[in-house]
Image (cartoon, protein in one colour):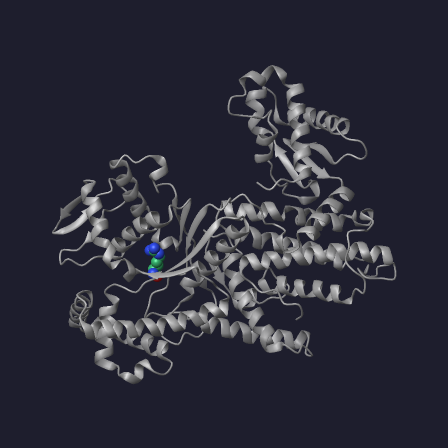
Length: 604
Ligand code: ARG
């Protein structure tokens, strides 16, 4: 846990205050460790209204133990804590504690907060927000995982961006992090592709713009199969041959795979997405038999209507189907084999599957199956992967704007989305800064930034409503807004002719606007940990929006004469202090954008 010295002082003083006021309740505290400063630290919250303070302790849950009403507890503890604070230090109080209803609100001394925060940010530079909590423990994160021979749709985009960001976040916290792409390259759809190719395709189909041609085959198969069900029988037959390793089927399958891989790699490059291990369903083909055998040994399998199943003993969930009556294995069979494989190979601390909530029940089934097996084998906690495997689910991506062109069927193609975003970004940049030299490159950065940010700026469990006007609004809660703020900060730094140092008068940064910015900068390390704890980059996205907003209010603040109070002026001392704050904000926005997977332009 990243520790904030203001919070520590608050917690120590408050724990001491509780002890002195409620000494008689000390014995009965049990697991409510209100007399311990660590416990208080864990229970700190952020006040709804930031003007109330930077952090707060709600005292409601201690009413019973202390046999007192929450507002009365807060009213007694606040002055007592302030006493402890002032007796433990010389000079100005490091935090000021106030009672408000059932809360103890705390506000760091503005000048001390400015110096300690800005010094910490500038000393750490790019590493600000990093920590060592992970202690090199192994975390596997599976994300993206599109299906070969199908288009990369916006459905896979959200998984890709959440996973890519989590990989960076966990790395920053010193976890030994492994990003995995698990491609869907096995299953009956390849029988369909083979049949479609033989019916309507030719060598040329695999040559020019071939991913698009594969998609056309895929769509045509489904359209035709609606009328003629014999096609589905042919597809099953072709897949069977593929499973048996028949040469001509395997060759075609390899070709489809290569075409899709090239296409996906292009998309990942465009999005700046990275993996440490690209694997696929077919990698597990030769590992399924052993997996099934171990489940049989554990006494978990049974035969139902000639199929091999595991009844997972849960009224809400159907059994896991491992082998169909005709001997064919399934998606779940490969996933089970993959679970065993990853556990054996990596003995992970955690293994995450970033997959949409449509597959929630499916992952519940898989994890229940693992739990039953490990119970049956009476493994020790250390040897169990149960509890270490997690489904990181997320909501749907919905297109509000129906005008979005889809070249085929109703699949929204990611590349179309990014192209259109870049085109719109270019228009805006041309209006704002027609002289910009790097206009092509910058509009790409802004366009992809807009698309990526739209996926991360709502809590992961919620649906994303993708709306063109919203995602590209330079003034809205968007990626481009953050990128634009970053460019503005860089331009201020370019225009400052001195060196940025912390050898400044921090009292010049004690104003309300500055304090709000500083509070948010100080919160950044905890925000990164919050994002890791809930596996949700949203925390960082939300904090950056607040930070950019707070900075822009500082930037646009007017003085008593109603004129903009410029950051850089003839007042050397004031400019030097303000530019240190500007540099700190630039570093944090840059780092935050990096953790989300967005590029931060210097100019736009
Ligand atoms: N390829 C699958 C799909 O597109 C997602 C795979 C998710 N990961 C897994 N281990 N099942 O639906």
